[in-house]
Structure formats: structure tokens, C-alpha cells
Image (tube, rainbow, N blue to C red; front, side, top):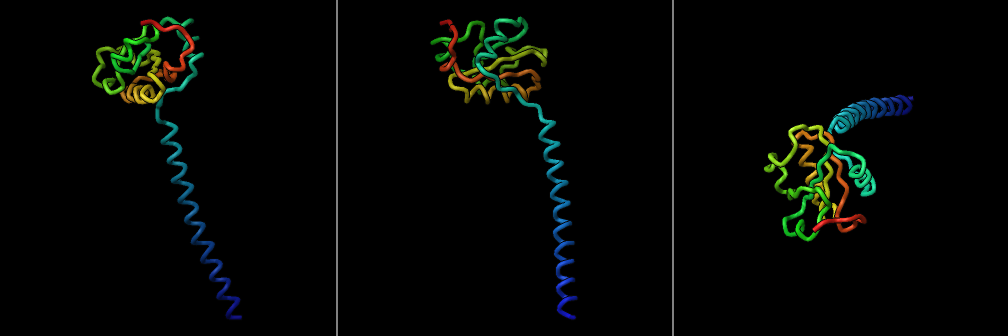
Length: 142
């Protein structure tokens, strides 16, 4: 009889202990997902989608986040060159309207992601990153 009572107490203690832990974990997971869903980020789009925007929209800017030497070898028509490491210090080259559509690219897609995130951190709300010019199948200018 003593063994049964001890086993029952042990089981009830474990249930109580684990049920409290689960409840706290659910709360912290809920809070984390709420925080991350409220974070603003840039949107990654395909190069075809970027080209369609360039062909149909009027109010946008294109940022080439490569260096001057890379830009000079060829770039997308109408792009302005702001290396990713200069985005935050080049606000005079950026639109004052934080809702302006901004398309961002680089050579392979790594630096354009950094530049796009920097733009978001500056408060821009309509940033679209579309990878690198090395896979750009459309015309470029030199």
C-alpha cells in the first residue's frame, strides 16, 4: 500500500512539474513569434519580377550596391550606385519618402541583401532585393 501511495505521489509531482514548464515555454514561444512577425523586412523577388516592375512602374529607384569599378563595367539602366557599406551614410542619395519602391541588386546577391536590410533599418518600407547582375538575363548599360 505504501508503495502505491509513493508511486502515485511521484507521478503527480512529475505531472505538476512538467505541466508548469510546458505552460511557460508556450508563453515564451508565443511572445517570440509575435515579436518576429512585427519586424519589418525587405522582400526578395525574382529578377523577372524586378524587370516587370521596371517595365510597368514609374515611381521607383534602383540601387546597385556594388563598388564604382564594378558599376562601371556594366549596370542596369537607371540604377544609382551606392555600395552596401555606404547606404547608411548616403541618405542624401535616397528618397525622402520612406514608402518609395526601392529595387536593390549587386553582383551575386550577398551585398544587395545587406544593403536592403540597411534600407529597412533606415525606415524604408518598400524594399525589394532581386539578387545579382551576374545572372541578370536582360540588357545592361556601360
